[in-house]
Image 1 (cartoon, rainbow, N blue to C red):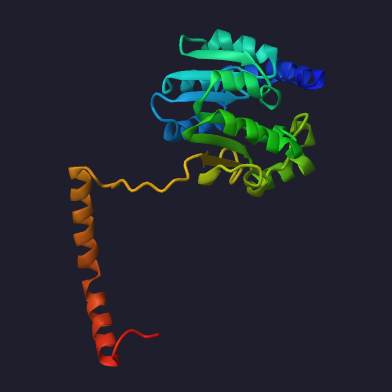
Image 2 (cartoon, rainbow, N blue to C red; image 1 turned 60 degrees about the horizontal axis):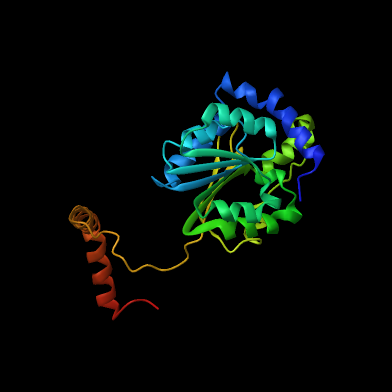
Length: 255
C-alpha cells in the first residue's frame, strides 16, 4: 500500500520550498535533534531515520553509526539526501513506514530508530501501526528517539499560524504515544529552540529487564563512590547526631 499521491506531492513541494533552505541557514530544530542523537545513539549503532528529509541529520548520524538507513515518502527528498549524505555506510530508501513493515524487517534489526519531528504528521489513529512496525524492527536493547512540537506550541500554531502547518499536523500528547507501544520512556524533556518549551524530546527503550551488574564496577568508579560517600557523611554528621539523640531520648523513632 503506497502513501497517497496527495502526501507525496505535498512533500515533494515541501522539499523544494522549505527543506533546501536548511542548506543556507542553521535550522535550530534539527540542531537540537543532532544534540539528542549525540547523547543517545551509541557508537557503532545501526540506525534507521524515519522522515530523513534531505539527509542533513543522516550525514551527522553516519559519523556515529556503523550503518544508517534513511527513509522518506518524498522521492525529491531521497534524491537530495543521496547526493548530500550518501556514503558506504549510509543509504536512502523511498519508503513509508506505515506501509513498509516487511521491507524494513529485511533491512533491520536497528539499534536506534529516529523520528525527527515526524510523529505529529502521522494520524493519531495510525500510531498503533507505526509502533507495531518499529517494535518489529527494533533490536533488544534498542532505543527510539522521538521529537515533536509540544502540545502548547502546536495549539498556538493552529490558532495563530495555521499556514505553518503541514498536510497532517496532530497535537501529540505523551499518553498518545505510550498507549500504542510496549516501549518504555527513559528520557523526556521540553526543549527551548526558538521559543520556550517549543519541542518535546522523548527516548523510548525496548530494554525493560532489571540487570544486576554493578554500575560502579571499575576501580575508578568505586573510588569516586567512596569519596562521595565520605563527603556526604561529613556534611550530615551534625544532623545525624541530633536525630540519634532525639530518638534515643524518646525511646525510638517517631511513628
